[in-house]
Amino acid sequence: MYQVFTLAGEADTSEEAVTLLQKQKVDVVFCNHQPAPPNRTSTGDWLATVLAQNQPDIQVVMYADTTEWAFEAYRSQCAGYLLLPFDPLALQALVNRLRYVFDLQQTKREAANRSLLIKTRSGYQLTPVSDILFVERSNRKNRIVTQSGTEIHPLGYTMNQLEQMLEGCGFYRCYQSFIVNLSKVSFIRADGNSKTYAIQFDGYDGEILLSRDKYPELLTLLKEKYANIDF
Image (cartoon, rainbow, N blue to C red; front, side, top):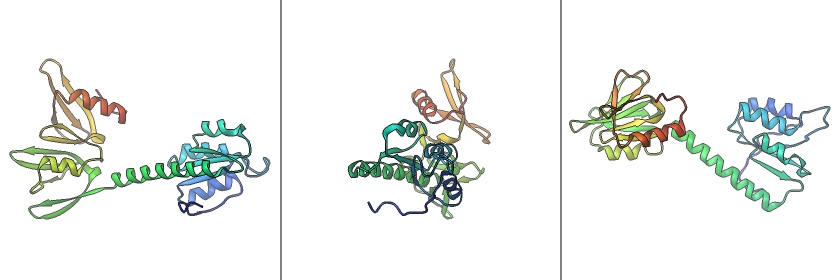
């Protein structure tokens, strides 16, 4: 109707839908609260609950001919609820919302799978962003330290340029000479007596400096995004 969706499949019961979705990659499911007689199928909110637990990337919209089941849709983590017969304006607003969330999901996936093409003395090296632990500037030269243990020595980049290249991928400038991958941080060492702070990573033997001014800001960022950091 809105030239947004391609129909990937149809199912008569909630159980058939679960089987279909185990084989077919989809982004949105529209489900009737009572897709078939109760003796043949579970209700649509059961399907929504199963998907919320096992395939949370799928957006589920439940619909029915009464508002009675709207709360069940909300409790089942549905992306929306539609009342039959469809109100075209309400449907259009919901489609816009579904597309917006889908675009955010795509951006997240692209960032997770993104790679950097880095110029080095020996040529150009393609490096997955998710493999980078940190970037360091020392003696007017940069190095990129990766989780796999290799080091990359970029040629002709400033730290500001590298920071811009990593923007939107979960990196943070924790010191003038360091940019860190927030998802790789495992421990923050804080020495209250000497007022020194440092960052450690799983699988990396050593630590890097954390600016005293950046310490509270970094803690806030990590607490908002991650739950497995020791403070």
